[in-house]
Image (cartoon, rainbow, N blue to C red):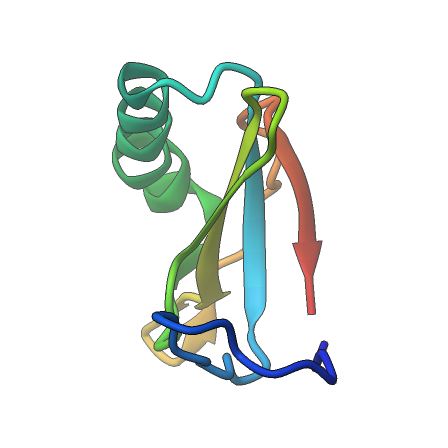
Length: 99
């Protein structure tokens, strides 16, 4: 989404190219909870998901109510020329896969 407003002073505009993201919600956005969630994504969810990191930036969103979302760019994993198929039902915090 592009916003038709000038970039605030002291900030830079960065346009993120279209990608598929796995979105994980964190109801307690303190640094320990975020670190634990990120570790779980990389060490547990990603290796069993059938996906791998894509070439796009990670995105973190924090709201004023102490909640956060971590957006991980993903693409289907390919092994021996075939996609790896698995269910993406590991974590209740997985919100969605967005194209």
